Length: 325
Image (cartoon, rainbow, N blue to C red):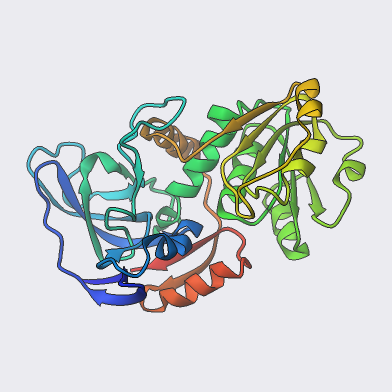
């Protein structure tokens, strides 16, 4: 089968052996996969000395074969892959055995994948293959950050710096679905225009004075994944006693902030990562109930996947990038 791999420091399309399910496993013939920023970083993390690894965390397809003992799915079922490995029930933090699909295990940028049947969920019927293929990692990250950690409520205002990322597009839709007010920021006027069309109530350029522009707003919750570039600025617009959830750091990991103003303001700072299978199932129910669709910016065939990597690298996308298989 064809697959996109990282092998001894090189990214390339390679013929790999077709997978065979053992007890408790399924083989999924993939129809689409989703590109995540995580996929850009894995080659540097692996170095130049390791054998072929199929990249990719997100995917959706059709069950082609099942191993002994599998009873939650059958051959022919349409499924979404849960990239959060071995995290089943909601908990304050992931269990010690938690990993994300695509390293160290083979991932989804291939014609087929074998994995535990516990890692697949039935695909919502209203989603296209591309929509289903880009769903789980980003949507689950946003769902946990907004609902489990952020505890967003109807009528509250959510501030989301960095509009345009896959997670941000899900956050906008989730928040609007439950009756929250949404404020987003971006360096790009075009992305702000698309965020407005998606449902954002207020849009701001990164170059603007956020405190001044939001003088008449009360921000109850900040969801930040940018890191150093926006952390203090986001904190500055948050109401006293407000909640801030951080799930990423696309700029620098380390931040400086005024500790005294932080504890006097009695802010709540919460970390979040991915999510459990329990939360993924709640997310899929949410999407069915609201007939919600992921935002797919562009699609690429597997043979053109390097172009997709290059496109994500320059950060021009609004929403997700799909790989069709």
